[in-house]
Image (tube, rainbow, N blue to C red; front, side):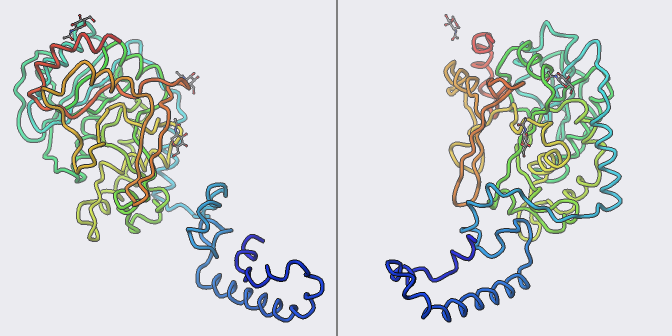
Length: 393
Ligand SMILES: *[C@@H]1O[C@H](CO)[C@@H](O)[C@H](O)[C@H]1NC(C)=O
Ligand SMILES: *[C@@H]1O[C@H](CO)[C@@H](O)[C@H](O)[C@H]1NC(C)=O
Ligand SMILES: *[C@@H]1O[C@H](CO)[C@@H](O)[C@H](O)[C@H]1NC(C)=O
């Protein structure tokens, strides 16, 4: 009915409202013609544009339809899984349903993805000291052998390969770190960090935050703009449809089950390896920003928090996020980052829609972030000086 009303010529009929009965008979032929015309147009439109996702919206432009799609349940085309997809889905759901054997001595794996030396080893050492049996460290150094200043990091390098920014080799390095860290059965949570990351809280806080919940912290949102779904390629069909495509920051922290899932998957990984790369079909797609958010939102959407526990400041709106220099490192800046308790996502289309969600930890609103990036190496002294103050909790 909504459709018919919207399509009928309203203005001429409004004029006759005061006396509709008298005028009605003489208008009947017009009505019949209009109705016939409408049915014809509808039939042609249906033929040319068969209904896809929103069955009630096929005749209206997306602008008119926008408000309705909010409350219409999405109708997916029924699709028969390919063999590969079927096998992957079965393996994935089996991994997710198996009860995880809890370790007697659960540890967190801190996985550093870096080109070379880690400028904040001294700071991390302060963070780790006194908690020796509750963490393990893995370093993937893709360019040069790191020089260590803390004994905690000596001998923690894994076999590494070259990593090119924005390419699948980045995801491969993440998987290499996970494969090494998973070999220690005590590792129950796996945190990916870069050389420019610093801790925002003390060890106990981070440990209890990550191990005290069942979710992985994988950043994930639907961005209809050019830096989101605009990077999708139809070559990803049939397994990955356009509406499955998600975006999120690379810096994840995942529970053990999810770490295994990442290594078990090759179907979705292969799609990103082949069809999400810089220069793909004249656009740039970066697998490290899309593969895991898309993968988890397809196979275990309620198992991820949808935000990353690593803070980064994009508010300057530049190509790279804000990087903190020595003079920026103050008690106040740490206080303000560690008190953020809402995650914010902004779409990259012209609307620049801002999505704000409370950071819910086991249903309670809590600070979102445990780590922050990006810090210049020159910030080290100030960080060390402030560390015991800003990490009181
Ligand atoms: C984790 O999941 C299990 C089973 O699904 C549930 O019993 C338990 O309460 C959850 N733990 C937390 C911290 O949410
Ligand atoms: C994350 O977002 C998905 C929708 O993409 C939703 O189904 C899921 O519940 C969200 N996770 C949490 C923990 O809120
Ligand atoms: C650390 O905190 C103490 C007490 O709150 C304060 O006296 C001291 O000046 C702080 N140090 C720095 C470097 O901010």
